[in-house]
Length: 242
Image 1 (cartoon, rainbow, N blue to C red):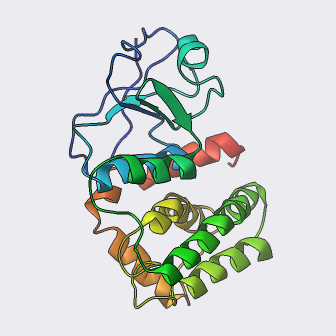
Image 2: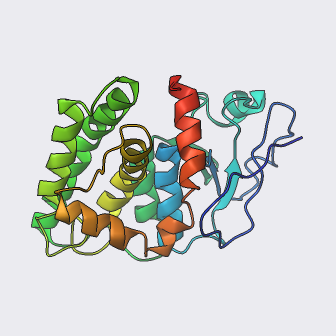
């Protein structure tokens, strides 16, 4: 028994329905490389985008997990942390979204997700180090009542300033690992600002406006993008927002 695939804006492949506690496991550690994810999870979306960006749809199989009704075998036999994303590869399972994106970039063929330029690499590491702070501001904003918090506004302003580093529209000129790290959360921040706070995330932030405009032309990302209303309803339910 499985739940339905949520509404994806631009599906380009036949995606499997999420597996539940009633679902049998796939034939584990049989040489197949599998990316375990939840379609609505922004952390899992990072790894999903990286897979698509590298053109690995035929080499890394998506296995969706229903986080509200997780199969017991996932924790017992696949990933003891019982989180997504996780990657089954070469008889090992690896997790943590940013580590996983870097692992996919380093261990599979396809376009490099980081440039060779040393200054850009250093800037990339600085931005990746800030990503947890940005995400924390996002989740804090979800829980807060009233207007957008100063913490959230400051986090978004830092992204606006960081987008000035290159000639744009992305953090490092070309779409990269850094964009992959941030776009799932920027996407949700934008939906939340508009749908709940009645504010425009990109207002007065021209670099962010251009980023949002251009990232929505990147197939590797749009193939993972869920219907905004679905995400808004899901966030409201999770955080008890009327």
